[in-house]
Length: 359
Ligand code: PLP
Image (cartoon, rainbow, N blue to C red; front, side, top):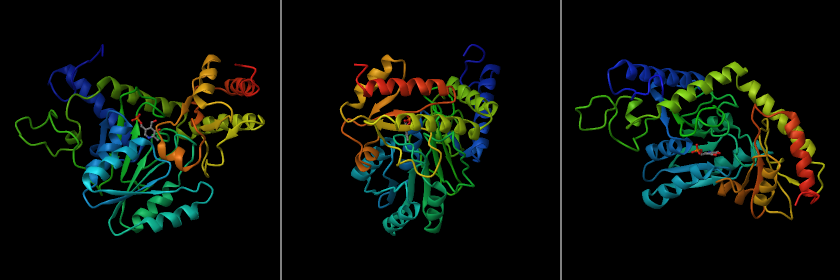
């Protein structure tokens, strides 16, 4: 903002050129990171925006979609609107985290002639379940379906590659595992799909044309871009590389969760939702206590200096279909900046809460 706070792609002056260069470099870095094409890497306001563009831009009246039982409301609610107003139907595939073959069987049964898309979250934001996205990609390919992935919890933590993983629409926020600022998100899409725009307006290109220019990716980015956010997202990607990449980050987070699981499992009254985690490395953990609402536990943990999310985590499907208690769960989601010592302190405080020594 201090050095080149100008509108990228608008003025021809040096400040605007530098701003445009920063946007381009970040777009290139994101495309490289996820094996996508620069022209098909679109900056969005958040992951919800990217998902809306992926779903509403691609689905048409009469289409049928299959989603997983672990989807966030960012997927469910746009589909509910499409169902009510646009004649698009969807089915929910019940994920069996312990049995991929069973999940695949159930998915096959849901496919109909009108099925156009399979859309799943990569990692559940409630239970940390890692979904077998390569298995789903093969199923989608076999059946001529588009394959969409919500990578809100996995981008920057798990390896993802548009081409190798067979993904057509990859949605992510900038502010979670990519270490960017809030108010950033990205949609990457393959050559097999070309979404319609959600919004039209000034793109900084073909200013005399009445109709929205077709040029990618500007076609999807009408209005002034979030330059400080995008620059921050670029810095976030550089941080991931400096840290040693997604594998190093995942190893650290999974180790913290392993220690946490071990420590919490000795607290007799605690219910850990860890059997839902699936085959992949678990990078977050949900739990509850029978005699306390999750919000109450989170407020106590806040007093002890721990920031956790409690309740239903904007994920109606995950909670209702996978049997979490009334009031939802407490979710612990450590990052690379957390340490084992902090996890040990956390477990100590949880033990005190469970024993009612902290009221
Ligand atoms: N999908 C999942 C799985 C999420 O966890 C979240 C946010 O927590 C979203 C989508 C929505 O992301 P955003 O808040 O960036 O729109």
